[in-house]
Image (cartoon, rainbow, N blue to C red; front, side, top):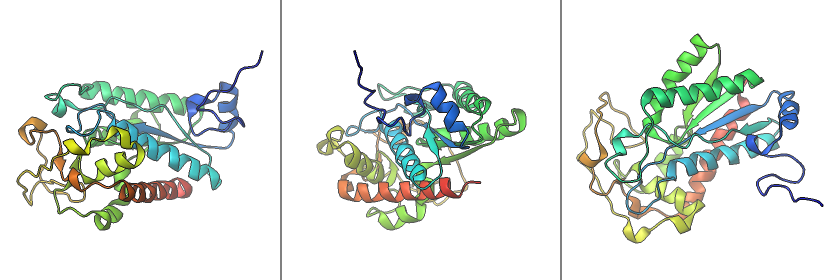
Length: 266
């Protein structure tokens, strides 16, 4: 009796997903000094119009598409299982949101990286998909290097294409923040069935030149607070401007930039 291969695993044995390989295939892959990308997402509210899975879905999609592209250009790259719950205490006022404690989240990311390093992965990219994770991942990268002798790179997927996002957007500053024009467009491109545009509402809290209120700008002041203090819907920005075709174009641009980084990584 024969068995069909797993749906996630191509018949030739190649896959951008680490968990679709068996251990002899991983051992063979390691002889080619591959890059491994660890998508780091979250499970949290994204307004009334998007599912809780947005951050996991988007960073995983970017990782897998970039891994395929880099591998196709001669830089073997594989994608580890996604860390699906992140640091999201600021979303806990909205039902369904999940969070790890800061120490727990940092330990999970650290243990993933040290496990991969122990097997012989020397290029590890922690590809982030949630703003609340970013500072903890940067701190973890320092500890991994100087306390565990494990070298990792850390980046949020949107940071690879900030200049492209600036020219892509149709909203004013403040329009790209959370469950916004960008995230809604990307989800509409990838999973249109999960987007409820009839429930999308624009929310633009008061802005200050001292505190960032938009993905594409930074300010000198960082403030911690709950999203319930900022928005009644959970969204911040202009999701009503989302468009699936523009979402596909932006996704391609982000994947292109991440791929270029993987190609040039030495």
